Image 1 (cartoon, helix red, strand yellow):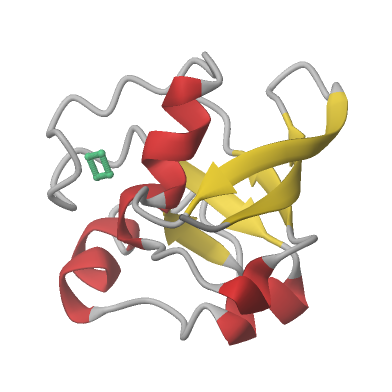
Image 2 (tube, rainbow, N blue to C red):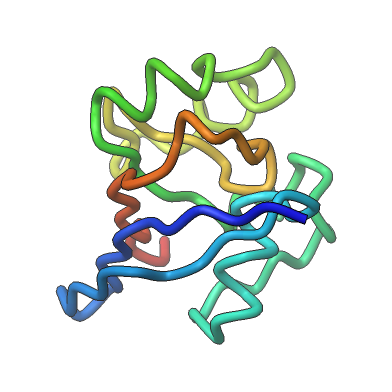
Length: 108
Ligand code: FES
């Protein structure tokens, strides 16, 4: 099993470095394991948007950007969507994302 670490900025603006993310988890699963307040009501199926997060631009690029299902949902989030928005349940673990900065998006 491998693991990487990311920096997480929560909705209060608190920044935590060294948050571990294991290779069998989606980013959403890593965040919820660390008790970040992500509801993930759809269970990781790209249909609820409660796992919305922003990646730093380099990590966004390395993550491969949004997939089609994700894009459909993000399009509905006009106010909170940024250029580097992802549904964290759709972000797959990759060694390349070691050191990424993840900001949890506001609740809508
Ligand atoms: S957990 Fe529902 S969209 Fe990601």
